[in-house]
Image 1: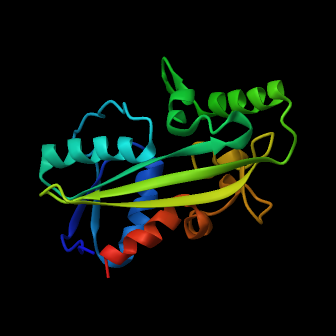
Image 2: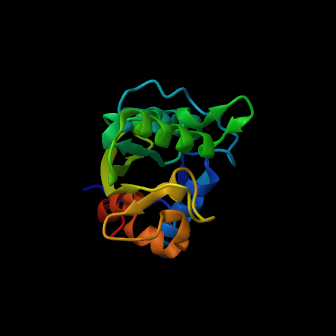
Length: 201
């Protein structure tokens, strides 16, 4: 597998929470991580119906704009009782005229589960697809899945997105009740990153 030897990596996200997770994951390798917002890049339209497809759109747009190696992440939550929704539309469920409101998204998710009469445990999976693209267009894809269940009401003030209602399999605390270090050891993104580490050895 091709190695990532460049000292600077562009992470194609405007999400500050994701960027901080990535910085923490790459720090031990001496790789300087810069975010798309810091580079003044626009967010491309995510028009694919898969996490991999949307990650590729983001990676290619950022790579072509900067000439840097790019890591793009597309992630979301799939809820079994909603036939896998919101999935690639996870962020869309949080959109409002004034920005993203994930309390709105979490409330909608729980309300739709109630409307369908889905019994507990209400199982779900956080999914992350990391796509690493080099300036010559070569790419590698890494997928991580973290199974768990949803709880209500939201708990915890840490994390971001759906973290306050997601309890990972075998646990009792939500992602939002865990420190960044704890979450980074078991998260979907950490699982995908563990596969990506083969490019960093």
